[in-house]
Length: 312
Image 1 (cartoon, one colour):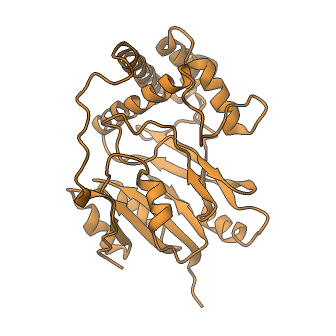
Image 2 (cartoon, rainbow, N blue to C red):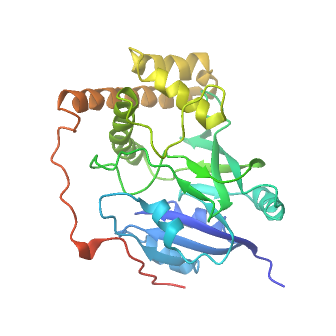
């Protein structure tokens, strides 16, 4: 009798040789693992092969869908349940044990996982970073990531990052935490958030111009947690002095100072991130709704997304 848990894991990856070994080690109880790669130039593929993962190459064509939704539509999952794990995340044995039990329950079609975010080696427990609920375990035919209509903005990457999963059915919450710790240096954190701020600037622009409707999760103060967060964000984008407010909110009001020097650095970086979003939003609005950068040219049809399964 197999000791594997009947869950298919989806890992989006690109140049993740520093994080993949620990991530894949934590996933060995899964029945199958798909690493969906974006033409990594490091040892990511060799590492995934050493763990007997299925490797699929994703070639982004510059438009919707991005990597996770494309994977949910096209990968030949042999299990009903899919678990989406980023390369800098780990699933603990306690969480695996809980997952093995809840997937037997037909009452729910998905579950939120709570992340413990580590930064500079310290758990960022305050500043609003914990609890950090993410809908990552669900029946793959029932869920897709929302479209926030940001695909026209270049340099945002080929993967859904802050989009939420729209799920058909009832959702539960798991008790055990997932760990989130990037083993790469701060250069990569800054590079990644430079890309994220392009995406966030477009989201802010859409919220301010009421272009956020249509296929997305609505804003509702009295709805679920995601709808309430979306409602508050629609208010947030209209506030002045957001970089300063973000630091005050994280470091003082939500007690980020309790996480010591790591908390202070994290709060300053979040404030800087908010400033990047603000100036890019100004750029969007001042230049007639497009970033002041040369737009990416459409890729030739030969580079549209396709499956290239190189390991089984």
